[in-house]
Length: 196
Image (cartoon, rainbow, N blue to C red; front, side, top):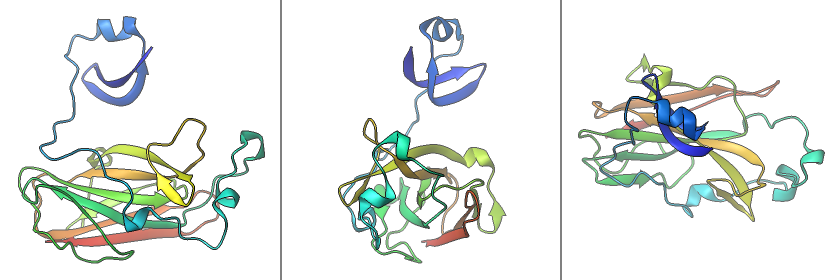
């Protein structure tokens, strides 16, 4: 078995597990995400610090047998905005930052939302228009290691959230909004950014 980006019957499967036999039967070539700026997010910024009253061990127990129900959403925020015009990722520096500092646009425009906790129904809008679910082209898991959120999760790590990547290609100078409903009885949380 191998993991990667595969197309099966014209459908891109990111991170799907496909046997060698299945992969050989695919008539279309393997497609990779095309990004003209670094596709990987840097770690260690101010929004990757775990901010909580509880010890990280209380938030993310290490023994699977001790796990309880999934945590409801604790926070959602715009983590980064990237574009070809800006030349890469602009990381937000404060929780609740309302405007990008850089000028974004060009052929590619992407937004990454950091979601701590677990939600059921991620929704996103650009300029007041709901984006199709396919605009959410990638989801990376977040775990806690020490006092930091890390991604991808290390082997055996407990998932405490996700980075959700949105493709906004063709948009420029507009308002991005994100919302998700918590698993269980938790809150519905939202965030936004004005993209310059």
